[in-house]
Length: 173
Image (tube, rainbow, N blue to C red):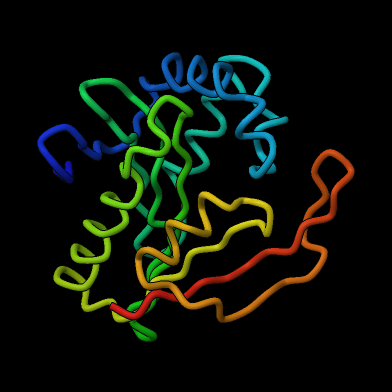
């Protein structure tokens, strides 16, 4: 299912056929993405990019849905509904965006649209967003969506020798 966010921002389901473009996008943004995303170092070639995509496309998590973010006709990142728990009326999301689209409100608009979509289509009442403590841009998106810092996993991950906590934000829908 395709989701229109604005006239210039579209979410389209990820496919295996996206591997070439996604691989190029990761390579172009490697230094930025590697600061906050553990999986970046495992992306070495087209084959490993396909593996990364397939882990998401064929996820066994309840309600999981993964999309490519298209801005002005160009793939610019990935957005995922990582899991939906209908009993708890809770969903978790994850995302990354290329540098050329950051600071333009793209991800804020995407998150706002997904919040409304999940609330209206599945009755979700809470949305979880997890961010490494140094990922100020992602934390700002969570806060703009109305996220409240509800938990921290201390010493969660080390990147470039720096230990980072995992901050968990909960958005009431």
